[in-house]
Image (cartoon, rainbow, N blue to C red; front, side):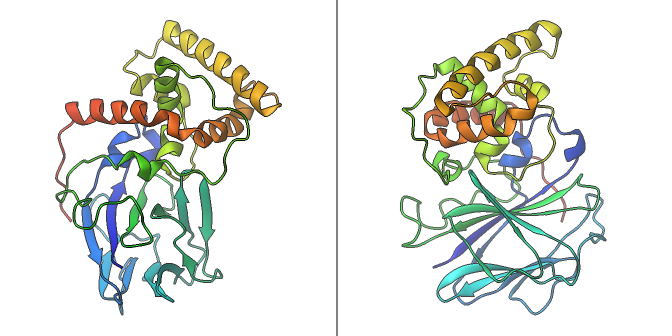
Length: 284
């Protein structure tokens, strides 16, 4: 079974407000066939497909080892290995999934039909993101290659079910979110619903930006009221206090567990972005 790899050099993340460009954008893509090995790093070698990681200026990424990671098949399944000799970590993420792969980790079998594999630069301002899509009998519901591969340098949304896999199921009945609630929550939890690795975020500015609202005091108060009501509802269902920013991870986890209710809202946010942003070709 082949593996589709979509790559994005996500840059400027320390200043990023709207995460959609880097979540939807694709710089390069590959189809890795059974028996082949895919490798990435500053100057990878001894693999069938070698991907040199570059800085935004086009220079070799100095913070990366020569061969940071390798993807190949293990007992008929795709697996990721950290091949660095340093403390470089590979982050394997999807909605409800987070794993750190170090040089001491055994080969990590890909647990989902779709997941992200991410390496961060030393200053965390750049992430090298590989969207790994397993094709074949183990990926029911996904179209065969090459349908999911957009043209190079294109911006294209992943199908909603690519971002709709949580590892747990909420025991309580699903919340009765209105379309407006779903849209607010999709904007507030957008990175997690896409399965991106965690990082510090200004969620107020992010949410208002995705909702096309001005970042002013009136809209901040409006958002606070909406989130306070939604947190109260989540707290009642979970039986715990979710007030305040320090409880945000639990609230986000609650939302991700009910991702199926947010599919239309996520598609709407993506379609609005794609309608107003043209793909930007990057030189590699």
